[in-house]
Length: 423
Image 1: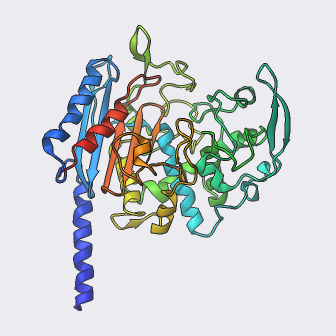
Image 2: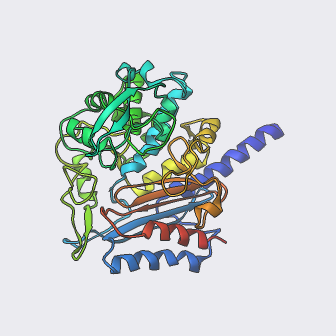
Image 3: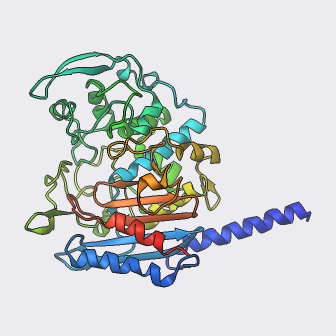
């Protein structure tokens, strides 16, 4: 064996050893953390449970490819006093957006489209979009003009397409609701294709590429994946992402055998505290609070539809931290991940984040105002879930609970406590 070959073998052994410790579900290695400080995570989460702000949670931290912290707290269901388990399943909501972004980049790397291509090249319904030009005193749209630019595929990643959400209070809210456009999670028997055709008939909030509004662009990106791949989005995710990454508990809709692992969704109500959610307590109207169990199971929302476990999602973001690969499965190239974690949308302070292809990016740690690193990319979900990926510290973290509406700041506190524990 040549020296070069021996070096390659030793590198592979070292790499596989590191990731093997990550894949060992109950094997923890907190090297790189101050143990006493890492234990503060327990204190902070338990305090939030004691105050009645959250029913329970699962928290996971990995450093240098090794699970350093992985615990469950409280209850998955308060009424039955069912203890939260590490393999409980959570509605990831907008944490789905990262998965859809990766899915689209998989097709991009195969030469099936360019990021600056117009969406209408593949979905002609979006060829002749209108832009709101006048709004009446009652908030109704009184005039539109033809869009001067096409929506580009890259605009869908970055929320710069002019497409909004029905729950967002702006000029598009009334027409979206009137047209029957949903926020992304439903048990109705509707399809992604049908919803996107409805969306194409609505005007845009602004000229594509000129501004930022958080919206259904990632649902449209999911539909683009369906059109280009020729596969339903659930099948595409399973074949191209979930199976290669051994994400065994990630689904749009849960198999019956896994429904009992789904965490109950709660709402934090004034004067009442935590109560089982009915689905209409917040500006996101969920027609089935037991989603993703129950009826329907035909709408695959690229912006909000996936449910998963902390461990599964950690495997997904560890792949991104590894520049597109995990345990021999390469999902994306190094260059694609580098592009995704590069900010394309500049922050204006409170309303617009520094945003890349599917993620918020920290470009200025001082401006972010909390502990963190330049280059960290992250996002969260509507039901009190969050994750972040810190390439500088070689760190990932996942926090999962299930409350909306919520007044808890536990996600921000979790971020602080993880960083203060680093050696």
